[in-house]
Image (tube, rainbow, N blue to C red; front, side):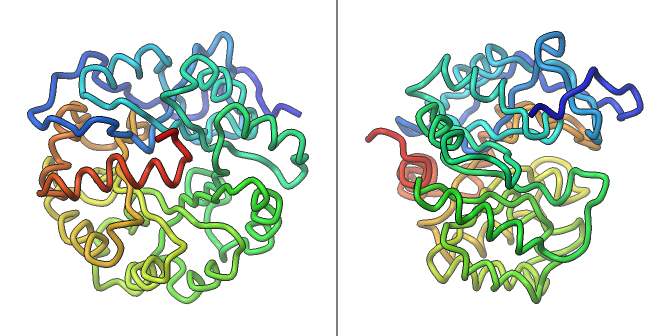
Length: 301
């Protein structure tokens, strides 16, 4: 059942992206994948959840396709944003428009049926997202009961669970995720809170977890982790530590359209050029932009 209502004007508005990005200086390898992006709207067709914590502008699938074409990103993974709750209609409709180029990460309740999940799989969904941050009741312990229930449902499909969570909030709980029957993917470098660095206990736990072989991390949203301006230099050490720990389980994403951004809105060309800063060799870029996403999101080779 849909959780949607007409837009709630009490949720604060956020700025849109640069809808006409420059071309980046970095030439991406053939098959490069943006592993974290969202599409939004039109709001007249896809109403927003009353429980949302922000109100975005329309950032349409064709707007995102324009960004991809300008920056050289040939594949992408669309992630269900919190503003739509468990109504994945826009996600599924967009996957149907670009079936070869796109995969999806949906949001579901524990009441989702296997038949629903199977239909989503056929549409291109390869994971479920659990958002522990962008919600009114954020905080508390890791919801292991919820994670276990959803993991059991998607394991037969070969999916993963994606967590949006601040790893520094769970330094003593992260290792419990190793017991789940599916891989776990963390967004935004593990989303350490602003001011937390490589030595933080939660980030160190994340490094241990990814070294064990079943956890992945997205190099996304650096502007969410720091008060630095571009090129977000305080994120360099996080990227280097993750690259050293498990380069075979890292992916990169644009985080388009950069919702809830409190700093200066970056041009997506600048974000693509950051890849060369974090992944200085062609071999690293080939692995993390092409090879790893092909495995994690089941793209055709």
